[in-house]
Length: 146
Ligand SMILES: [Fe+2]
Ligand SMILES: [Fe+2]
Image (cartoon, rainbow, N blue to C red; front, side, top):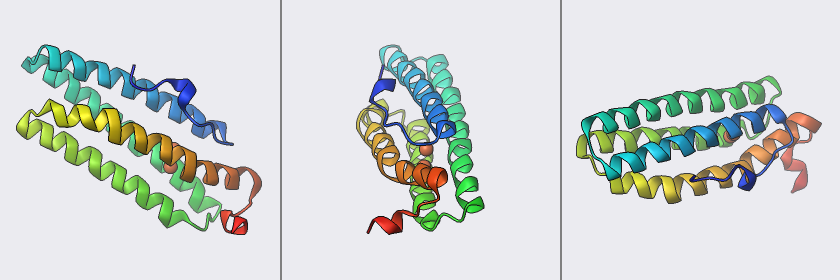
């Protein structure tokens, strides 16, 4: 298991927490598929990993879209800031997969999962998602805190 669900910061909106828990389940499963491929680098294991990665990407697009639509609906002031973090994350996910497909370099992938991704996810939920969920719940703009 790469990420323990109990380590995930909880935000004020359950619809977001639910998606984050789904995300962790998908990531943990994907990480297992990666380890399987590293132990036994067959074409079949590679394809299983890539298919699962693509499903994770689609889930992440929907995850981010769900937050962005509600931010627009409620006129969340730092919408662009939050959205651009999402876009950078998706871009990195695409680049990492493309690199793996071309070079079959599983070490970069492994490093990505074990450090960059885990750090990004925890940090993003702890900052952007936390502030955004509080705004959804209370209508309080985070700008008031400064
Ligand atoms: Fe989120
Ligand atoms: Fe987010």
